[in-house]
Image (cartoon, rainbow, N blue to C red; front, side, top):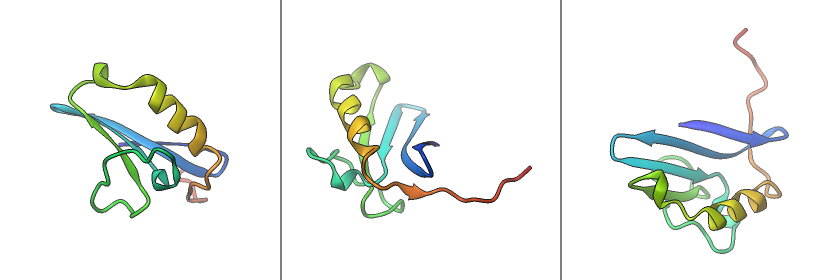
Length: 83
């Protein structure tokens, strides 16, 4: 899963796997409407969607979630670098 962010916080992560596409919104529980999937092991505030194909994506809804989640504090990024 690749994480994406704004400023110094992570906002969402996405990944494609055999048979499914996942989009997780960090602190998605603060959104209205709340994304439907609460994944196990990534934090109680994370919510998202699991799709059979990227073609199943509700683009207006996901776009609105992404726009709103940038105003919610994200998960803090690590300050150290590997290089």
